[in-house]
Amino acid sequence: MLTLLDAARAQAAALRNNRDDDALRLASALRRLFGLDDTGDYGPELVQFVAEFQRSRGLLADGVIGPQTRRHLDPLASAQLAACDTLWPKVSSPEEELAHFGALCAAGGFRSASERPTLLALRGVWLFGRCIHPVWHAPLYDDAFILLSDGAAPFAFRGATHPYQVDSKASADLDRDGRKDVGMVRPGCYVLEIVGNDPPIFKLLTRQGRAEIPVYRDTNHNARIDELEKKASETATRGEQVAPGVGAFGTEILLHPGYDARQPKGDPFSSIGCQTAPIDALRQVLGAGRTIDYVLVDAVDLLPTLRAPVDVA
Image (tube, helix red, strand yellow):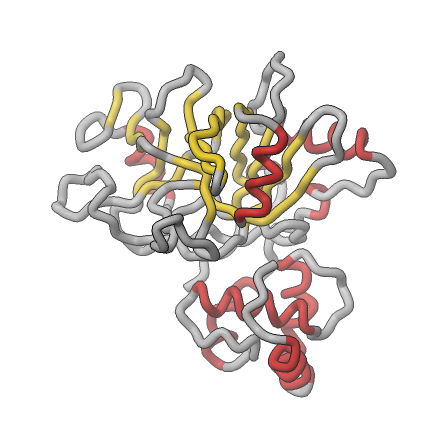
């Protein structure tokens, strides 16, 4: 977890929230959303999550549930979102954990006879979160990753499977309106190959070893991919970076450090379609192998009988 607030500020924010009846009404739901235990009120850990969320939405990252923060969090906390407790197993051994997450990989379409490690990415749910959330393009580690390796306990960490940016000159223009369209990797089964050790950076390839990765493109630039944009991306036959039978694709898509790190030359890492995670987590991934199977799943698709998430501003 990122630490945006020092101990004194975190404690002060927790006390302020716990004295605010409107904020207290959100506490239990936020703890479920962010994957914390159900203590029912605010503590320093929860306000750190709130501060991260605030920063990703361009708000003052102080951990305090004020009117602007409530406006963004209320739809997530008050709606009847899909419950996803079953994503996180209550098991007694690493072997049972491996079997559980292996079953989730299989549910995402993964079939492999190789002995390579597998990285499972669950889009739209915080690590250990018990509610699904909408996916938006923002600098926020709000997706869950689980690294599966034979002989080792599963390693779970936070990251992002979505872009941070809304615009980029390096993107393709799918609808040919003169404005480049940021892409988001579609759910599916891929391969990661190491291209850099310090910091660890992997290149995303198809199972056939190609660099043309199917993506959804945000053609209306609202930092969300809606159903019309998904359909348009899947069925596109013309436009930049379009292939028959694939639709829109992206190239040079990586798994690399995210917004909390800087590149060796000092520039911040950005994302217009790459997968991102903290450097320390990526070092663990690199330690498992230089070629890794990658399974990306929309968490809500693992829970077909439950309600999909509501939209959020």
